[in-house]
Length: 225
Image (cartoon, rainbow, N blue to C red; front, side, top):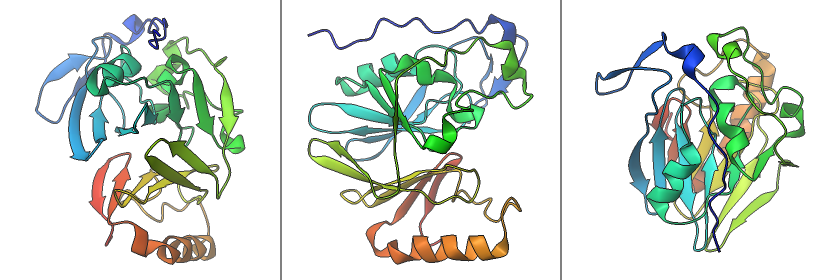
């Protein structure tokens, strides 16, 4: 069966004059595809493109991507070639544009119901020049749900610090919490009350024994943070 979806990436030419520098000092226009991967655990990769990091998680029969980024080109094709398995599902941590532009490349996107209405919002940025599709299939996730990959499970937590509707995904097998922008070193960003943040910390601490690593939008952190 041909599991590769025939979806052409959208036109990024309007962003040609925007230049981005990668972590190696290479400078490229935003309409030039750029992907780079780093294996961080068995069957687990950090994917760098333009925007925040995405994370690819491999099960026995398929892999699943957390966040789609804002890079030019097909992050789905890149991930499928990397793992050699279909990557038709995507998990969204939250609906800020640096995590959502390429959602349309996937057969189905899992997200919080709170993220649906603004699943594409350029937030006044240069990304408003893009014609981003939003008619992709969506499945809503809630706190306590489980994402089943054969040989691997991800537990869903709805803990909102950085953005309403934010989801985190706990991989007990590899002891990783994929936490989006909720635990990325920019904690307490004044969007919510101190009392709310206190309750969030208590919730993260309640299952702290089950993860050692935080895979955040801006990079990887020791969970001691």
